[in-house]
Image 1: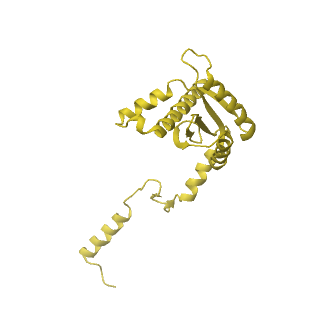
Image 2: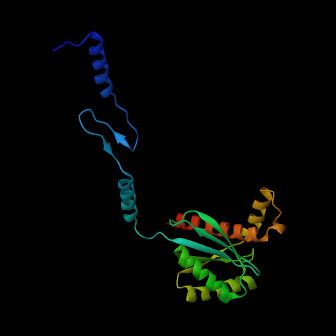
Length: 199
C-alpha cells in the first residue's frame, strides 16, 4: 500500500482541524464536540410561547373607548394586555341605535371585554347636559352590549388633542375627525394608566 506524501498528510490534518471548528448560530444550531447538531424548530418556539400565554391569569382584555360627540364619535382600542391605546377612527351614526349596533360589531370583531365612555364633566367637576347624556348612553350601552361599561373623566382631552395636531402642523379646524379620534386615544390611555397604577 502506497504511503501518503507529506502534502497529502497536511491536507488530511487541515481537514480534520476544520471539522472541529465550532460555528454557533443563535436559536438555529448548536454544535457540541461529541454530540450531533440540534435544531430548535419554529414549532417548538411557538409551543413555548403558547405555554407562556396559557400561564397568564386570563384577566387580559381589549378595552374600547368612545368619545361621544354631537356629529362624530372618536374611537380607540387597547392591545390585548390593556397597556397601549390606539386610534380606531370615528363613527358618524344617524342615531343612538345605529351607534350601539356598530359598537356591538366592533366589540365582537375585536374581542373587546370592556367599554369606556368619555364623561365630559365641567372644569368645576359639575355635571352639565353633555355629562348627563354620556351617563344615559353608558347605561343603555351596558344593557345592549352586555359587557362592563365605565364612565371616565374626559376633561381637557379635546384641548390636548388639538395641541397634538398643531404640533404636527395640522390645523384642528380642518381635521375634526382626527381631533375626535385622538381625544379617544388620550381618554383610553389615561384610563389604562390609572388602572395599572391601581393594580
